[in-house]
Image (cartoon, rainbow, N blue to C red; front, side, top):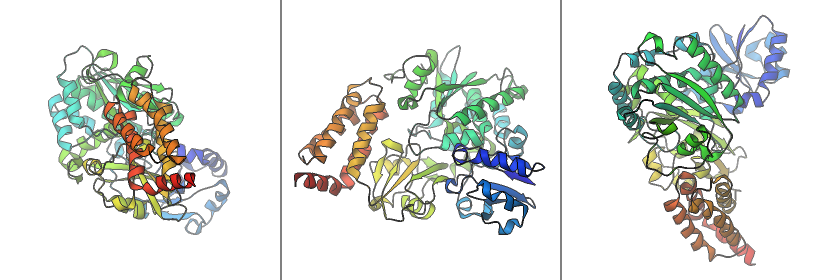
Amino acid sequence: MKMYLPLDSAAVALGADEIAAAIAARFPEATLVRNGSRGMVWLEPLLEVEIDGVRHGFGPFETTDIDALAGDLANHPKALGPVDDLPWMQRQTRLTFARVGVIDPLSLEDYRAHGGVTGLERALSMSPAEIVTETTTSGLRGRGGAGFPTGIKWKTVMEAQADQKYIVCNADEGDSGTFADRMLMEGDPFTLIEGMAIAGIATGATKGYVYLRSEYPIAIEVMNKAVAIARQHGLLGASILGSAHAFDMEIRVGAGAYVCGEETSLLNSMEGKRGVVRAKPPLPALEGFMGKPTVVNNVISLATVPVIFERGAKFYQDFGLGRSRGTIPLQIAGNVKHGGLFEIAFGLPLGEIVDDIAGGTASGRPVKAVQVGGPLGAYFPRALFDTPFGYEEFTGKKGLIGHAGLTLFDDQQDMLKMARFAMEFCAIESCGKCTPCRIGSVRGVETVDRIAQGDASAIPLLTDLCETMKDGSLCALGGFTPYPVMSALTHFPDDFATTAQEAAE
């Protein structure tokens, strides 16, 4: 008997380690693989049992369900059937996450058997300029939130003259309701390593770092083990797969500051300095880590590179719409019936994601709003649910995709309170470098409180304050905080007017 049980943080939090120990005691002859998560968080811990070569799911699994595994599996109380046939899996276009939940994360043999290393081998046969061109042609953009074309960033670093260059992976996934980076690193770490190695070959960088947040202990452990295995088997080191190219990497752990998700704050932290935003220029691509040319890319951006080189830029470019090419891992959370990770090509209407894929709210009440893009994203009402999921399409509606986190709220949510939360979040997490963010967020909390106490005349002041923060802040923390605040005020004015009226009465 061969079984699979995730070592993913969500599954572990729900008792996967205890279940694994109990299975080992009950079925000592069985092979138990600790895989990544398939992304169906509402079914975690999801146990998979291989039956006649097909993996059948059982979940949400508990230790009390173990004994029944010795009986008729088809009639097991937690039986779900073949996992690949479940609607959640069938509707996806899994490219970046194709191996997550499928393979043993720390088996390089398993990784190779599922297409791994193929992209790196192809890249080694190409010139740096050809690699950059392939990446640019694919249309890949930064998946961390900014959406900047990856190929252009690589080209800048490739053409820079320096005795040392670096590849830095931003794994400081601090947005609430986002978990794609963590799931990728825990479930398929070699694809990130492969992507970073290809980036190093393309740009002439010989050293890489993964800046990983301390709140992800399992990801830290898996990544460290994967780097050691990759080095042992020649994927990293002085001669990548026997070639003339050198590239090595290591894991650095951050202390948990939200602002260190911003690339220049991250670089300051890596250098042992206080995590505060740097003014630009100079750009990190020219003067980054230790003052040297540095590529700073998100986990998903780098982990997608091997797919592009395995299948070709044209293959990847054929997915999506407009300037949003390829696929995007949606992270669905909040008051939701089916929360988890769902990878799909850009272009799906927001309403289809919310109503069909996510299944609406867990409470069963109507969806009032969806915040897209983490705590700095705008709140979209149902009137905007026809918006296609794409960078420019969301920008046109005064929203942002960010790291593609979606948080659902039902009709009982007070949006004035959510506007206050956004300002308070900014005030707490601000690095203090620039006045609009440092002072504006504190004044923002005070202004929202005035509105809540019945002072409707403070609404124009809040609008003016948001404009100042958006135009004057050094980074996205202060610059994007107005998005949730103004979208709440614009799309849900009754929540502000009702509060003011009630306070006046």
